[in-house]
Length: 116
Image 1 (spheres, rainbow, N blue to C red):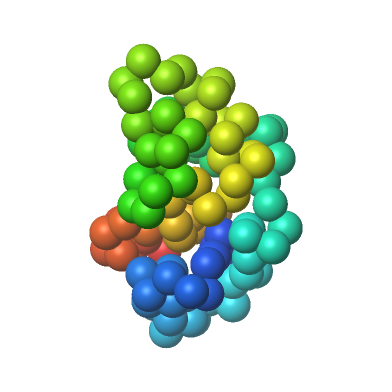
Image 2 (tube, rainbow, N blue to C red):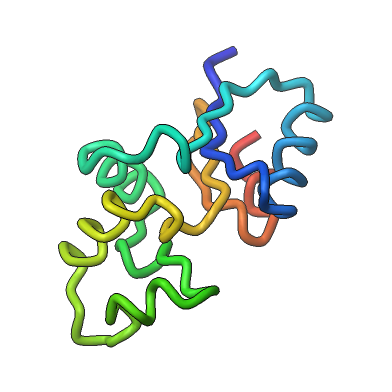
């Protein structure tokens, strides 16, 4: 079986639920605490491409940071959002799960079942 990776925030209840779901499914995922290790541009671009999403699609708008940086303005482009996500990893919605069958944003949690 190929490697399962979860880009995880242990402080997020949804992320913890997805990690529990992966473990219950017999997976031993590599846990990447992205708030500690951060993101690289190629890494985020690869995940977005694999999910068929744009940076705005995974922008975490809860809390004040995205709005205070002006990222919630529809006129702000994907490159600016991506750059902000690299500078502020908390701006990426979580969790993101990668398996041999694809990559999914685990919101709602059930989306991860598609790639198990």
